[in-house]
Image (tube, rainbow, N blue to C red):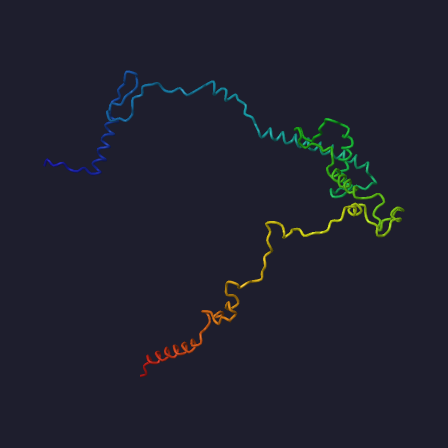
Length: 282
């Protein structure tokens, strides 16, 4: 009829199948480089204009095949066995040394706790300090690093104890504390009311009569404050200047007047009467 018809989904699917068949049936043509091209303009595949990439390296594959991988598990196992053997030998050697040391203290009392005075470990430290005291410009340490885990050649607790004892000796006499203290022959010859040397020096000073700290008669100083009130110019005490009493002196606005109570009672009576007048009896 000359009127274009609307294509449906089935028509579009048939068109796609037809285009695929045309592409598959299209002849293959070799281009000038020797690559094959599909004889269809609608083909999305672009023509190949370079050779295939060579991604193989025979030398690398041979080197990787001959390379020996490092087995860390075996190394760790061997290292662990070696450390275990060294630790066992060290424990045996230490046990032999301890046994030899303890054999020299058979029959003697040994204190193993750190809070006691005769601590066995501290006693050994003291012995080492005595041996190393004569070595100068030398640092002894338990570590390979400098000034790390160094052995102290000085016992701090003993230094503090010696300082405290020295300070205590300054206040202690050789004869000890005796009360009452014995008197010398010179002190016995003195009288009971004798004064000390310092008091004797004070008594040699000339006598000065005591005087007040401040003189009121000095220039620029007036009399002290007097708290006695005066009513020379103002009313005071509820009296007039002529001496008569002021009756309104103690009158206050806050005090209740004489007729205020009667007024309040009358007001209450009127309010009650107004309320009664409003009541209606049926």
